[in-house]
Amino acid sequence: QVPLLEFGGGSVQAGGSLTLSCAASEDVYGFNVMGWYRQGPGNQRDMVARVSSGGKTSYADSVKGRFTISGDNTKNTATLRMTNLKPEDTGVYYCNLATTWDNNIGSWGQGTRVTVSS
Image (cartoon, one colour):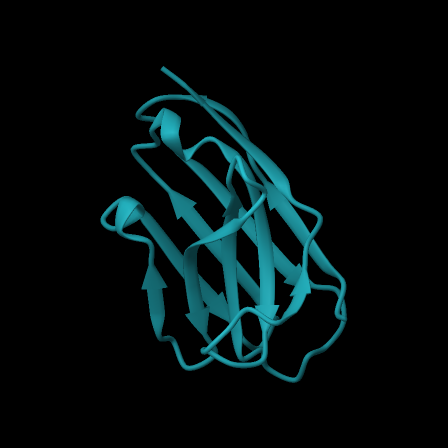
C-alpha cells in the first residue's frame, strides 16, 4: 500500500468548478494507473476518471466533456479538473493507484468530499 495524499474538494454551486489532486507520498517509480472514484449510496465506488502513466484516459459517461484528468508520472500525481458541476456529482471522491488498467486493486486515499448545491 502506498499512502496517497488528496487535495481539493469542497462545496460549490451547480455550474461551478473544482479541482482534485492526488499525490503518492512515496516514489512509485512511475505509476501505472491513477484515478478518482466516487462512493455511491450503497458504498460502492464508481470510477469517475482514470489516467495511465502512458497518458491513456477513461471517463464515466456522466462526466465526459465536463471533467478532465491528467497525470504526471515523474511526480506520481494526478489531477482531476471538474467543470460545470451538477448536484449529482456530489459525493466522496477517492483517489486510487492501481498497478494495471484492468482493475483498481492497489492503494486508496482517504477520500475528499465534493458537494454541489443546486
